[in-house]
Length: 415
Image (cartoon, rainbow, N blue to C red; front, side):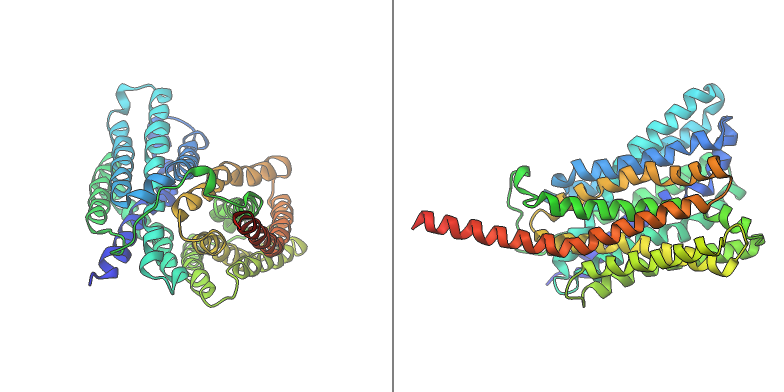
């Protein structure tokens, strides 16, 4: 009997800890912008492009992942490594390029090429874990997706150290080699349980209830958008509260832990819930409470550190929990067959949220010079998401009734 830790858990962690370092972007983006001679706000589009390509490649390549996870792991390895190491070569030879040309190459390599590796790699281990842990699907996917969240906590100090001890280009080369080895090892280890065979199915039949899927997609999109609106400006928000460098570093470590706990905790708890959608109801309710508290106390402008920290901890928890619970929620609504393809389509919400989340906060700062307008907006969005979450149960019930009626009609026709 094959070991599910070797065939499912270890490959998942190797892949997700490697590709999850995309969240370490802030560790070197300032140095990269300075070296290339461009504004940091310009080079940051590379991160947004990477997230966009992550979501869209997951949406369009879900079927490839479904049919051959070893091939998809290899595709992820090639694309991720090429994009990451290629960025190192741009840095190394930047003096031979104009700032505009170098920036475009970073957009192409770090953004588009590496983004494809991110999307395919993110999907690859998820269904496999649910197959190996049929009674604990939430726990299994939570372990993997927690790895994606913890990658920042692991990778950021290493990147900072390498930049201090060696050149920025060498950081890309050294870590690129390490990540390539990690994903390649996962490629050789990962395997579906013996006896499981994927059955080809036409794409138009993958999602039988499109309104139900649209509801889950929109709910997921809002959670990511609101999370990014706060998380991407976390350091600046804490600085407005008058906190020192050491305190900010400590709080950011706590929010990273909260994100990771949300990923493993929410999905694991969902295994014991009658309906996995209950987790999203909790996430949105808690998020509404803390944003209302932050708005009514004008916490950020008033430097109410306690309220701000509570806000960041809760939002980070919900942000991570929304990601990890999604695969099991989709499986509970659409079944295990073709779940990689369905999960990939749902992750397209991540692509669009990656473009819109930051802009909400940027607009708030541009129009008002503060964050209060942003808090009003995300509070309203969380309320909409809660309404959609409450509506999902009725939509699922209606879908079940429709399926039963269709099957009865087919049986009568056959008789």
